[in-house]
Structures are given as C-alpha cells and as structure tokens.
Image (cartoon, rainbow, N blue to C red; front, side, top):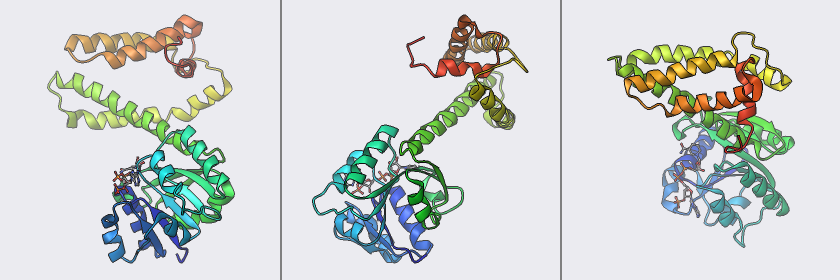
Length: 291
Ligand code: NDP
C-alpha cells in the first residue's frame, strides 16, 4: 500500500481509479486538464501535480485513462514528459492496433508499457466486481499486480499488447448479443400481453443454460471438427425460419432472426448442414460481404 502511483485523467473513470488507490492507502499523484476535477481527490489526500511531466516523475507507476488514444499521445508527447524508467498502464479504451502502436511509441521513449481495458462502471472500481484486463510483458504486470489489485479483479491476458482491447470488444459482442436476443423475445411476448418482467426470469435461465454449452463447443472449434452430437445445423435453420415467421406474424422486427438465418444458410450451402452449430465459426471468421 505504500507504492506511489500516478493517475492521469480524472474523468468519471480516472476519479474512480485515483479514489480506489487512495482508499487502499497508496500515495497518489493526480493530474487532469481541468484541474478542478481533482478537488475531491485532493481533499481525500491526493497530490495534484502542476503538469503531466511532474505527475509522471512522482512515482514509477503511472496510469492514464482519458477519452481516446489521441489524447494519450497528446499528453504524453509533451516536451517536458520523461517516460524513461516509468511503467505506464494505459486504461483508455481503444482498438488493438492502437494499443500495439502506443506500446511501440512508449517503449521507444524508454517506458515499460501495459495496455488495459476496464470492464466495469466507475462506481464498481475498487471492488472485486470490477474486472480490469491487462496485456503486455508479463514481468511488468507481475511487478505491479499487488498495487493494481486496489482497482478490482486484475487479470493478465498475454504478451500481445492488443489482447486487452480484443477481449474488451469480444465482451461487448457477447453483451449486446444476449441483450438483443432478449429484446427480440420480449417484443414478441408483449404482443400476447406478457410483460418484460414476466419473461425476464425465463430468458435468464435460457441464457445461463446456453452459456453452459460454450466450453464443449469451443473444443469443437479448436479441433476443427463439428459432429452433430445434439443437433444438426439444418435443424437449427428450420427453427430459425419459425422464429422469422412468428416475428413477422405478430408484427415485430425480424431483422435479427433473418441475420441468424442468412449466416446459417451460407454455411449449409457450403455443405455444413449436417454438422453442429459452432461450424458457423467459419462464417464469422470471414470478412463481411465476402460470403
Ligand atoms: P470522461 O468523459 O468522464 O473523461 C474524459 C477524460 O479525458 C477527462 O479527464 C478529460 O479531461 C480527458 N481528456 C480528453 N481529451 C483530452 C485531451 N485532449 N487532453 C487532455 N485531457 C483530455 O470519460 P471517462 O472517464 O468515463 O472515460 C475515460 C476512459 O475510460 C474512456 O476511454 C472510456 O471508454 C473508458 N471507460 C469508461 C467507462 C465508464 O463507465 N465511464 C467504462 C469502461 C471504460 P477534462 O476533464 O479536462 O475534460
């Protein structure tokens, strides 16, 4: 808890990060373009540095969390900023290419660099519920792991700096897919007078049940072999037609079911109708419009 840390960027997230370090007892130096956002943290014991350069100098570990990578580059590229000897952890959201590029840029300036992604909202930061993903050199992660644990459940993904961003967006794909599927069913059921709260517990049970299939299906994908152990893709595709027809019949949006069906039809046309659902990975693995 006595490891000094620096937090650059005090938006909603940066304030939560700095607050969690302070709460865990770390001497915490902060900087923000709009200095007034540091007021509460300073009242709680943080030190406000006059410049980014001074903030970085205050300790060997610096966290930056601003709007985007352009702002990161603008701030850290200032002439008075010396990155040599600093471990920089960039928790700003971005894509994997930006993360790899930022790593090269920071390492050329003598910093150790980890990229990260925060899978949580600011109020959860500082609790185990906040999952924070890191990628980059493992030794740098291990060196600071116990300090980072003040922020939540910290996870190391691998040496490729792009991994945290990739896991971040993979998680978003999962989140929106589950939510959209739930909204589709809710829209259909409401036409029969079933309200959202009545359907939600059923939907939750189905989502949890389907989640149980993932490890076994992942084995099929990793083996590249998709025997139809429980159901063939063409059986699923017939149920998809049923979902489309029902959506149309009750007068709700059918775009999402049609998208499912279009992907399954392409896989069937490619000869995979007798295989199990995860064979669709071959459709997902192609660029769109390249059917
Ligand atoms: P805010 O909009 O609350 O804060 C943005 C921060 O970036 C402020 O400190 C702002 O400074 C600073 N900033 C932006 N542009 C510049 C610039 N050119 N120069 C200097 N400072 C700049 O955003 P959040 O704190 O919510 O988000 C920060 C990052 O965390 C984002 O990448 C976001 O995607 C990520 N994140 C946020 C989550 C959330 O729930 N809020 C969840 C997970 C990730 P100033 O105060 O002066 O405007």
